Length: 92
Image (cartoon, rainbow, N blue to C red; front, side, top):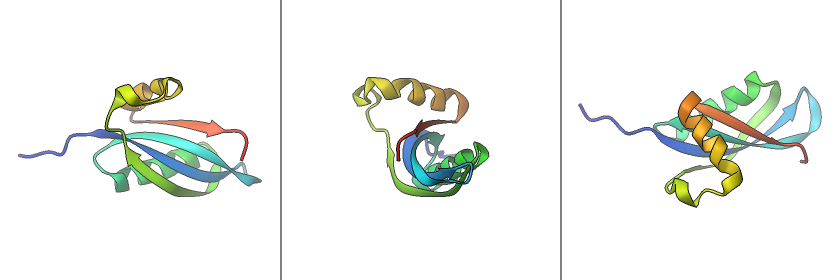
């Protein structure tokens, strides 16, 4: 049986926190099989954390983890460990 290996995708989201505009930017890291699944997981996790009107802006697979900026490496590791991880930017 051929299985597609799990990768880590970074999904840039926008969402309104606790119903209070303006929308904030959220980076979601998701360990899944494809971009569509990454967007589904990312939106679900943001909504579970209290965000509304969440939309995916762009999605990309992490091809070279060593090239990831140092401040994102913990999020990448946590996504691999827990399945997903969010970074919320407090400024819109």
